[in-house]
Length: 283
Image 1: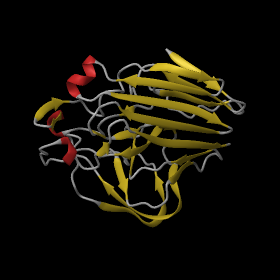
Image 2 (image 1 turned 135 degrees about the vertical axis):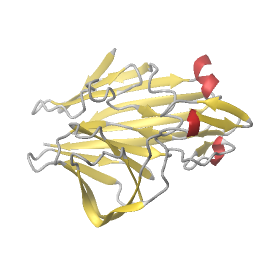
Image 3 (image 1 turned 60 degrees about the horizontal axis):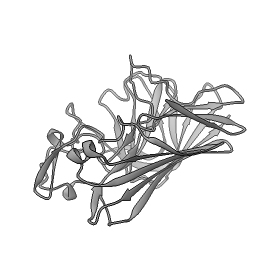
Image 4 (image 1 turned 30 degrees about the vertical axis):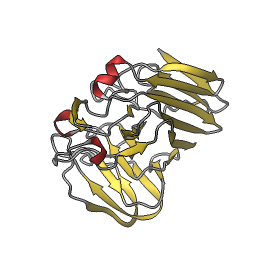
């Protein structure tokens, strides 16, 4: 099922399955900004990544001496969320732990996701709640896919020196950081940009990046606050994913406990933490 909301400028669609953003459409121009999810290319549109980012070594981890299995990007993206609040311009969804999730992630949690249209922007807020009497270890990431064309580009507001890491054929970090930008602003999306999978960016100080084109004046200005930013698409595909990550893939070094994973976060008992991104549209 797809739930909808709207304001004067845009309409919004979100799938019940995975609380996945499926549409952000301009009422002024009819432009659809979100990738259609063509299964011949890539079935996703905007998956939510929790409680891990990317792939774990051998798809497993250890916690308090017990080994658990977990698939790539975690446990919530292929399960339904419940709509818990709807207004004319917003939708809020909830997914909580259950008997199935506890087998791979032994924590009780609530994950709320709110999509809100404000003028010509979409604001997305994810709130993680720890319902345990112990610290909960987790990562979080968003993965929205925006329509674009080869030759379009992503541009920081100010010149940046940005490091890039990559993953191998097993989706594990290679641990080889290189400079992608050196006091520059622009990343052009070319046919071969993603031949080696995602760009995994860090080191930036500017938390705004815009999707632009030489062929039209539309701009998606993406605001985020994560320490890592993934940029990805299937090679030569007509979309690009802008992915704020609070966490990162495993490398080939075996960890004795989830608490040792690079980028892992710790949430105190009864505490909550929000993660936000915003897409401001100019037409």
